[in-house]
Image 1 (cartoon, rainbow, N blue to C red):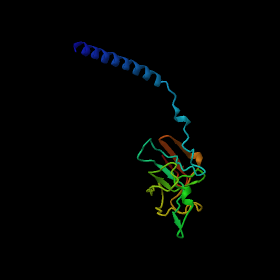
Image 2: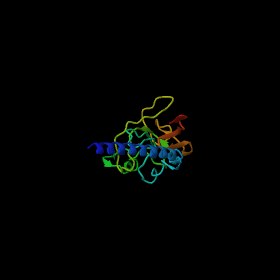
Image 3: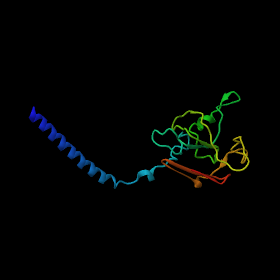
Image 4: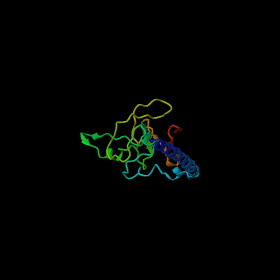
Amino acid sequence: MKHISIILVITIIVNSCVNKTEKSVETKNTSKTENLIQYVNPFIGTKNMGHTFPGATSPFGMVQLSPETNQQPMFKNGKYNPETYKYCAGYQYDDTTIFGFSHTHFSGTGHSDLGDFLVMPTTGKLTLEPGDASIPHSGFHSQFSHKNEDAEPGFYKVKLDDYNILAE
């Protein structure tokens, strides 16, 4: 029994030394890895019904903050509005108007989700109606340009042209 205890203690000591050596080698190797974030394009899937959004989120994040580029009611004149399906992720790359930012999105859902609370930074007279995207200054929405928009994992920013506001 005494020999088994000694062998067990020696085995534990040897294994713990080996693990420390492996960890130090692993740390040295990972410090030289390339930053792969530069290759991620959050706009992939935001065009042609891809149903993704470019906004900031983290894996399994509780908040997925992203812009909403249009407001479509689920029903028009008592009938289902097929345009609703186009905006189930909230963002379409071809749009040039932002109606606000909401905090919960699903990528690739293919259906409307969550009934988000919309936040829109503005200046000037308070306007409580979203307006029509085809009519500039008809509501609180704002025009934007993709030249003044940037996204990467965990970060999104855009300049709201109508208000000269940089939203990040």
